[in-house]
Image (cartoon, rainbow, N blue to C red; front, side, top):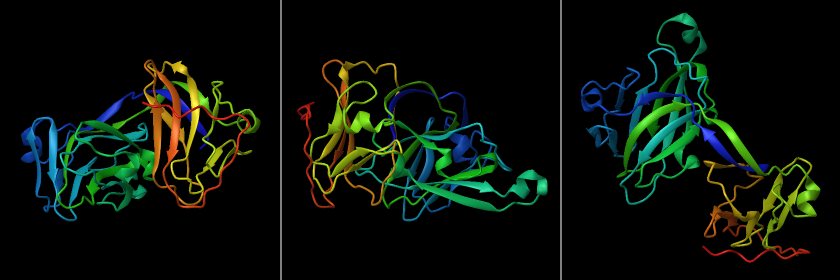
Amino acid sequence: MDEIKFVNADSGSSLLVDDFSYVSQYNAQHQNDLAGYTDDDGVLAEDAVLAPGALTLRTVPAPIWRTDLSGDCLDASGRTHLRLTLRTNSVKTFDFNVVIFDKDASYCEGGGGGGSEEEHSVPFSSFGGVTEDWRDFDIPLSAFGADQARLSSLELSGFPYGSSLEIQSIRLVHKQESSSLIIDDFSSAAQYNAQHLNDLGGWTDDDGSLGSDSVSASEAITLDSAGATGAYWYTVLGNCYDASTYTHLVMRVRSAGSTPSGKKTILYRKHCHFPLFFLSFQSASMSTFKTSRTAPPPPRPTT
């Protein structure tokens, strides 16, 4: 992990692909708000706008739902994220694939013909979990690896049998940070390793049971749970930090080696505002190695 910060993310301009506000536009004409063709592959148990403002998909094994972004090549280079507004009434959470297609450069540059498409897929679960409440899910277009200047279609596939999904809208948006507050960028090894201070001046450490937690010359902190079930790492934001002017918590992380399983990100709050940020490791995949600290960490807060 090389950075933690609060940001005020400005969604900026957006391009509406479909908000399903017209029943007949989808059910009869199979047209989205970009005038592109939209439908399933003919095997969904149900795909229909039952009331203005939401598309309902009820699945059978291996269905595909698709909406065309352009008959030719859509230039989305000015957008940063695909925003899906979704909810489900299924009992259990489920995963599916989000796929973007781009066309070959020769077609987009005026070569004519149908043009060949290339598929770029990401698992939806990497960006959140669908609940019974409407939620916006912003997927970075960069995650797909597609050429954003020549997009052609969006596809949802790989739904588990018996799942149900409602889509309120699909947009391509441009998000930018209008302001941010750095909690820690781990640019000073001594500041963390020796002083245990973040960039807000708050105490930061693990609970003494992580195998290792240290900042290297690469300006990143490495956390190894080493099989310590329930181990956690934290950074103190302040006694009662007012984060009401920020909209998102941004973390830049990657897995160093084996992907950790069973981890949670927790913001604890007192009666006023957020005092602590926690990462909780609940996996025990390796042997436990305990470390000692010259100053003990504060007691784990209760909610």
